[in-house]
Structures are given as C-alpha cells and as structure tokens.
Length: 184
Image (cartoon, rainbow, N blue to C red; front, side, top):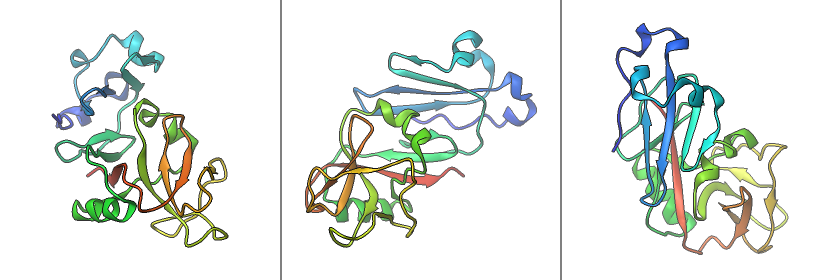
C-alpha cells in the first residue's frame, strides 16, 4: 500500500531527507517512503544509490504524492497493470484514471525503477504506419538516446521489454501496461 510523503519533510534539510523506492515485484507492489531518516536503510546504503536485490535506493527527496496503488519515482506516479489489454484498451484504461500510457523521456528514466520490472508493458509510443516516425501520445518524438527494435516490422505500437528495450508489436496484441501521471 502507498505511504504518502511526510508533511514534515519540508522542515528537514536536504541532508536529512532520503527517499527510497522499495519494490516487491513478486506481487507487483511498489511502495514509496518519504520523511524521517529513521524510516530508511542506513545512510551508507542510501548514499550509495545501488540496487539492493529487489530494492532501489536513491539519495535526495522529491516532492509530490501518488494515488493509492501507484508507484512514485522522480516526481511521477506509475500504475503497473496486472491485466493484459490491447494498446488501445490500455490507453483507454489509463485515460479513465486521468493518466496516459507510459512516456520515457530518456535512457536515465529506463535505468531507474523500470529496469526492475519483470514483464512486457505497453507504452504511449506508436506510429501511423511502417514508414512513419515513432511519436508519444502527446505528439513528441522519441529521444535521440532511445530506439525501437522493429522485431515485428508491421507493429505500430511499442512495448517496453525486460532488457530495457522498446519493441514494436501489433497494436491488437494483449500485454500489461503502465500508466503515468505527474505527482501532485
């Protein structure tokens, strides 16, 4: 379950604040903790920023909170589905939660908690046809440091793969999806 940010965190200096994202992907449960240092692993672990098995610890603190059952990372909230849908059904599901399908800004975002995921997930990246450019739902193009593996050249929708890659697929294929919204 989700733990909201501490209302007291603004009273702490940045050196006293640590935010960590802990994950138990067996249950697809992501929990964010914020606030007092006593609620975190030792400062040595937090400052190292290293992957601790199934835990991701990152120094610093970010503002905002997320709805229940959403994961928080870098000021965004992520809903990780447990039900497979087509790309269009996934887009509709995200819209019903006032969010959109996942948009990856750059490779750094991939190297955060997304690398911990254990399945394939639809993203908000698609194209109108085989010779058309890949565009996010907001109309922006794919970052220069990201690319799409055209494993299925006829595929006009893109899912995120375990290896940290984007792969084209037929939009009628059913898989899991990730919704994203800005933390409030």
